[in-house]
Image (cartoon, rainbow, N blue to C red):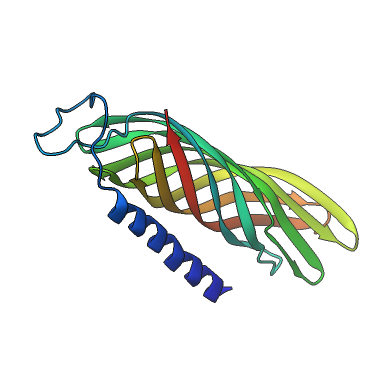
Length: 208
């Protein structure tokens, strides 16, 4: 699993870095918070956007030995405001996940998760470095001896990312999130089980 995570990290950085290298263009239309310089235009991050993401999740369920992992992906959307190089706003996402693990006698899975987060970052023209954090939520299913129990849990998430605009309307990102969905009491296991997860993903956004 560590090799898969490392490979995905390298691939993610290569894709976004490649997009940054290829992103040599003039921004069309007016930039609302700054004047375009004489040589070239500045990328406009302001406004609404929506997109898709795909990545890998690996986590841990406390008091069980179970470490659910798998591919996850879904949709995201948000809105940015911009003041010079400062970009800030909010984003929501909803994702399906194949993350699951069996550690006898327990089996746990995280079939879906989502978040409502704030974002704040620094833009170097069409390259945006940002931090993000907020509310996280999702389902956690625990199974033992054929008895299955699903809980909807809520907690928090924090992360970092880099987004590159490669046309005036399209951007690609690589993002890492740490998600903690807190703990709940499971009748199936007879104890409190908490769930936390690491999420590394690539995303593609369309800016309206």
